[in-house]
Image 1: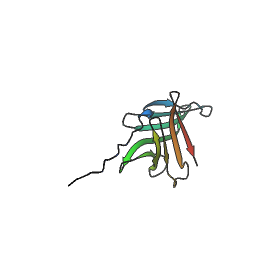
Image 2: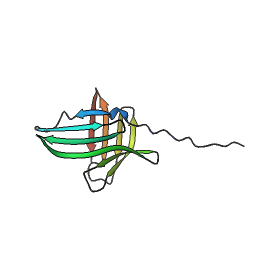
Image 3: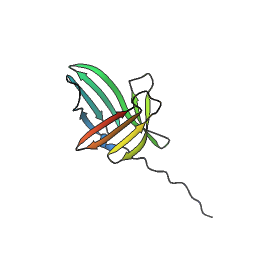
Length: 119
């Protein structure tokens, strides 16, 4: 008799995000910061002079062996974006039911984190 158990795939956590980042293509007079901690919880916020004009709480969470980008603070309920592509230095996550964005891409290039949002 042979007994087999399905091997659980390891979920690759996007540790390339860890650090303090500053947006370099912000609107004049505004500065946007994004900080990611080792537990993959983050904070994104924009300052215009000394006033906070935008703030979101970010985290990478695992639900049933699937990674999601969780965004809080913009709506009444958190928004989950499911990881659909991933490498050691990038990921794409999607939520087709969200008004905007429906798709988010983060990637590391030349020691800079870059992000794109798509309709």
